Every structure is written in C-alpha cells, then in structure tokens.
Length: 173
Length: 199
Image (tube, rainbow over all chains, first blue to last red; front, side, top):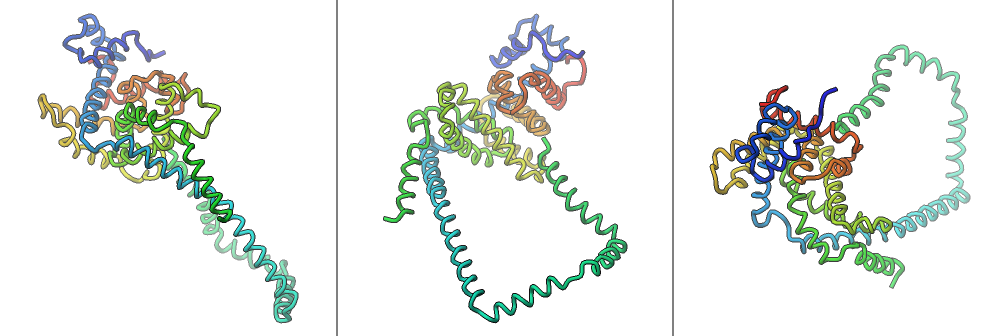
C-alpha cells in the first residue's frame, strides 16, 4: 500500500511558514526531504501557497480592496429589511390572487347560467369532443410512427438525454 | 393603516433583530476574517471581481445563517466554528458561481489574474524573480480542480485541520488524508516536481 503521509510533514510546513526553508532548516530535515517524496511535495506546495498568500496580502493591502465593515453591516441590514418586507408581502399577494380567481369563477358561472350563446357554444364544443372516434385515429398514428420512427425516437431521447447531459456537465466536480 | 402596512412594519421590526451578532461584534469578526476569506475566494474562483461580490454575500449569509438556527447558537459562540461556517458558505458560493459560468474557460481566468500581478506584487526584494515565481504558482493553481485548490489553500494558507477542511468542502473527514495527498501530488507535478522520488 502506498504511503500517503509522513511524520515530518508538520515540521516541513513549520519551516516553510517560518521562512526557514530551506537554508535555515535543520540539516537532518533537509536530508529527509531529499529522500521523502511526500515531504518534498509538502515543501514545494507549502512554499507555493506561502508565495500566493503573500501576493494576496499585497492585493488586500491596497486601500479600497475590501469594503469597510460598517458598510457591509449597513448593506446587510438594508437587504434583510427588503427581504423581510418582500416575504411579508407574499401571503397578501396570494390572498389577492385567490380573491381574483374566485371573482373570475363567479363571473364565469353567472355568464354560463344566463347567456344562451355561451350555452350553445358549450354544447357544440362538447359534441365535437365526444364525436372523436379514437379507433379511427390509431392507424394514422401507427403510420406516422412507422414512417418517422427514427426521428420520433431521437426527439424522445433528446428530451431525456439533453437535461441529463447538461446536469452532468454543470454538476461535474 | 391597512393590514399590509401593519404586516410590513412588523417585518421591518423583525428584520432589525434578525442578526444574532450585533454590529460591534460583527465589525470585529469581519475585520479579523475578511482578508482571509477574500484571499480564499479570489484563489478558488480565480476572479478578483467575483471574489469582491462573493465576500459581501458570504458575510450576509453568515449573519442570516446564524440567525435562522437558534438551536445552534451556542455553536456560534466559538470563533473557530464561526470561521468554519464562514468558509463553508464561501465554498458553496464559489461552487454556485462556477456552475453559473461553467462555460468560461479556466485559462482565461488565470490570464486575467496574471494582469493584476504588477498591481499586487509591488514591494521590496527581487521584483522580477518574485513575479516569475508568483506567475508559476498562479498557473499551477489554476490548472488544479477547484476542490483541490480549496483544500490546499485551507490546509497551507489557513492552517486548517483535516476535520475542518472536510467540514468546509463537504467530504468525509476519513477521506481527507487521501484527497489532500492527491491534491498535493497534482500541485507538485504542476510546479515541476518530477513524479516519484524527491527532488
């Protein structure tokens, strides 16, 4: 089984963090790192991260890079208030929508009960729906599938495969 | 005054008390941690402007997260837990941002960042050598997977323990040693260390 840790890792990290690596580090530790792959990786990576950290510290030291804590607090409060007001408004909006739907339903019922042309149109639409012969449609559908089966299969596959592919692409890592 | 007005007024009053941390405590916490979180976000996302945006969002969500879990309030009394929570939020935000812009190639991000080097790197010492080294480090980091970047940064820049890193990036603590070993191996290779045997 491959070794994935070494007892000297923390010593190497300390030497790098304290800027003792490699010149001012213990000679024994330097000799160990020469022969230990894990510690050599640790020295290289910790040194690189330390370098990146110094660079980031230099970036942050520029005035105006980071917003003032008071400003962040004030913005957070404003946003919390806005969100609280929006959340409080949502049930009222839902009640308004329900009331509107009831009113439309009531109006529709009144028109349906009193208007002769509306009742005539309703009877005509119902007769159309009940007049459809499903057995007569089946041969047409079968012919369509037979003629364009591959195309239909591709379309169905796209409907299922594309969302899965997009999900996997986005969800990777 | 209508019912809506009363409801709004109550919501605003509730929002006043929504953060468990008061302003003074927050300002201290922010001053202690904002630099580290910004550095972490800028390295993980590879985009300084995005890091600026995500920094504010991170602290806002931290304040809200702390407020919506009253049973966990004792947990938040510890600075270490607060920091871990902050970095966990930052990690999730960076992940979401990456998902939103998954078509953007990582190389261009690294390229953008290189341009900022001259602005950030001015200081004492051997400027040319520093820039070369920093450019190499940056390139190596941006060729890593974001999770590897996050793990290595937390381990070596923030000095986080394996358990803390596991909590922040959302993996089992038992698998941290192996994941960290692999990430370190990849980074070392990218930095030019040969595979097998110490240099």
